Length: 335
Image 1 (cartoon, rainbow, N blue to C red):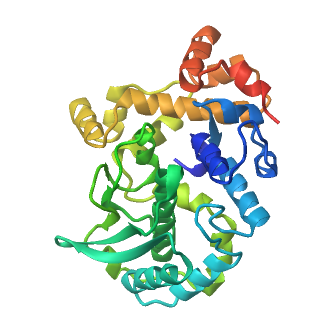
Image 2: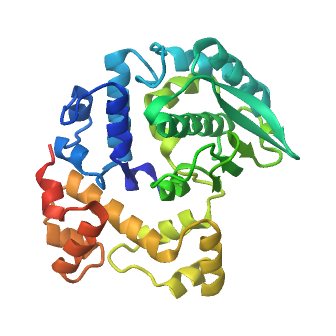
């Protein structure tokens, strides 16, 4: 599973626009630059590709000269994250680098801060809210956790896993997205928002150098959002197997055999990760359908066939359940 096969809720975009004070129905230049159909912004179940979200985010960064566009009470001017990363790459270990990360943001942000803390036998990075983050609080905390995860994984040159992702807010309606956002199980309603690292993680060496900084930042926030590519959750491995056979999706017994598990064990482990086989299968088909509708001119019936739907009507019904509108209506608003 890669960024090119994933989509994210359009709500991530509309919340950022709300934060910036755009009136409902407005179409900012950043939306157009990302190739996002304005009509999708009014669809609560609509989704955009990860690349489109990244393009939208970067366009706002340039427009506002703020690398956290409109999220905080004062902007992080262009070049802020570059200075941060240049200060991290010379650290001897991930622990030292993340300590520098916390110190850096203490200098540049007033609204929240980061600190390292012990959690039993484990170590964590905690986000402390210093001011009211407003209606978009959950989105801001989500993005900051993605930033920490993305930078830490980049520095270690491996996708890190977490014992737990603790969230100091109730489970949101889009909680199912967290399996693809974070490399660890989410726990809601906690006292603090934090990433709890697996033992030994912070002893890892920093493997990046100054020459790697520019390439990493050019892709931001793409590399923050991508799911782990190593030591992945079982959910991600199931998704990979389904993506490889979109036209003829494998059954639960076939998936279980490929993973050297019994169907019962597969179901139990997916349940422990907060999901189930049919939910993963639906998400894979949904994302593949949206990407083909937005990025190709294939006939809708052909897209349905590529996703294993023999009957175009069945594809229309399924897509309406995923996105709230039929595939033809979704494509009609494409730029």
